[in-house]
Length: 273
Image (cartoon, rainbow, N blue to C red; front, side, top):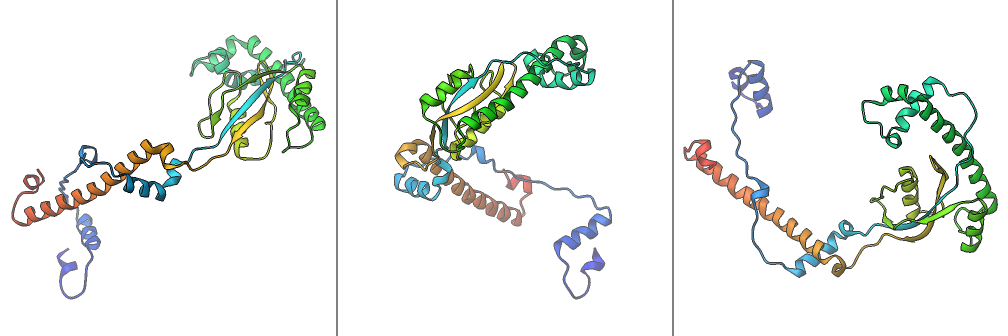
């Protein structure tokens, strides 16, 4: 390090540090921390500033798109008739673990013990998957438009003809998809995607109860709200931003005071108190 600094030229702090590290120098460091969570300055609300902050950051308060759908479940056809291999049972045991209440870490053990039950579910799933394909083709033939939904009466007549059972699901926001018993999560995600896309139904999805399709009943586009709609959240957002700016100033003041005290001869730990 002495050779590095001797004579003319320039050595960066990084070069000096590298030289000292190569010599096996041990470093002792101390740090002072100013906790942001403990910094809670008191200041009154300023609606004018809050509104200006809201206008500049309106996207933070965007109300997401919402969609309301109807789930239509079709009765499962008779199970497929074929032999089920041990390998299929092992693989599908993981797929059916939640439905069968198999705890994590016990799937392989339970698969061997409940072979007949799992095999029966596999054969039902085979027939339902085939039914999904047939229903999808039938729906496309009857209502070929992917973007224009048929008249409600026509659609309901078709659902009834296929022996489907309908149920309304509560509306939900995109990004906050619910977990609905009996409806695959993938189907709910597909319905959420339709909140802001063309299309009036999802694909058909296989379940243990039969094929399921979700039909879009209503969609509400995402939008930027007015300040008054989200006033409490907007003011809180402005207050947090203002607190952050004040904390930066406070940290600079503390850092300057610490440096000044150390320069005056105080020990670092004493100056940092």
